[in-house]
Amino acid sequence: MERDQGWVHLLQQKMPDTTIVNGSVSGETSAGGLRRLPGLLKSVQPKLVLIELGGNDGLRGFSPKQLKTNLAEMIRLSKQAGAKVLLSEVMVPPNYGPRYAQIFTQVYQDLAKEHQVTLMPFFMTDIAIHPDLMQADGIHPNQAAQAQIADFVQPWLLDTQPTPL
Image (cartoon, rainbow, N blue to C red; front, top):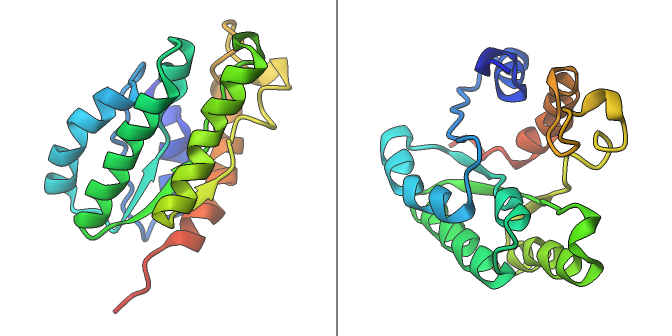
């Protein structure tokens, strides 16, 4: 799928008075995102950072403890740069076992509480149950799902917007 067909591009079209910078990289883990974040914060100087990472950590069976450490540092760096943070919950498929899935999901709830940031529910919850909205891998949303994701994310961004001075 081309970048101009994705939900971030569609969201930008819905919010023309807001500059949205897509800092995502396909296949990124929280460690990779953390490595890239300082440069993005410096070059973009965002007012709001949406952190939606961890799915690839979970798919690779990485430690939820390390995920939490990486995301906590991303939250800290974003706040230190003067940005509000919106943290997106991420879940792993049930085949990883209920214990791992519960510990993994708890990471996001704990971080939101500990760092006093808004937690956006996992946007895939209502999409993953519709095979016509999923790629053949059953994990990633297809092009048909992108507008639905943009519609889901938009009110969370609006509600988390920094107050103008």
